[in-house]
Length: 276
Image 1 (cartoon, one colour):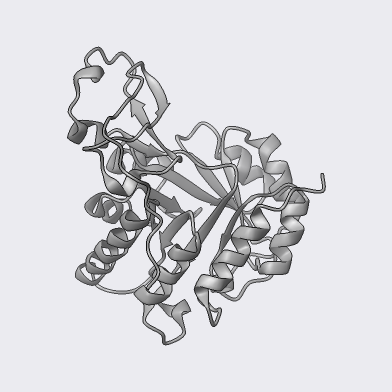
Image 2 (tube, helix red, strand yellow):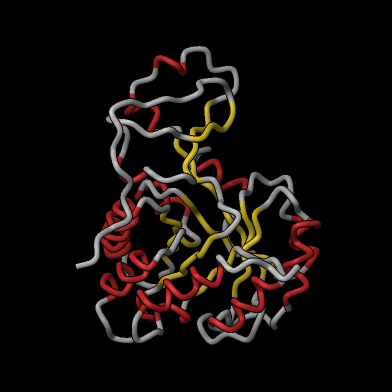
């Protein structure tokens, strides 16, 4: 049986209590699920007593810092192709997925809460964030680390009021104007795409091409940009050769006969040095 990627416990915890994001140096008493290099403490500006916070209070300040190279899995039950959904997702997480987005367009509130809790149990086991699609209240109810919005969903400003400051928020963008409009709205990342034709999303927009993803770092340098849409292994290799190392996929992993192997190969591609 494959085991989750957990870090070893240490006997102490050290942190810099000054305001602003600070990387975590993990020790006993802090949550096992957050023992990886991409979690930071976000200390409120002007905090005077943060150095005296108990571990349980520090946990509330944890936020995810987007790595420069990251594999983002958008996962819906429909993409599991009749296989046990949670088993498929678990195999992908074992293979090295860095972010998991729960993307469900149907189901009752009770059903979504139950599914979300089970997914959150998995992501916490592997020390990665869970992102909820479209629904700020569901993200808040689940205690999810992230929320993703489409252009026609709740505004980023309204969503932020619901989920609070700890949750990172992403937004789908499909052209340069939308990327520019995403700035200054309290967002943390954007999805840029679809880069290629895709059948995962119904009524998907026309492909925007790789150049828009590369331009995103200039148009909105403060926002982490993930390429999404129609990315398979060969296209991932091409994107990495052009310096694009934040990729979001769905069927490339969920549609594979071996999701663990598919994820592992994509992670290997992300580690290849860029040609430029």
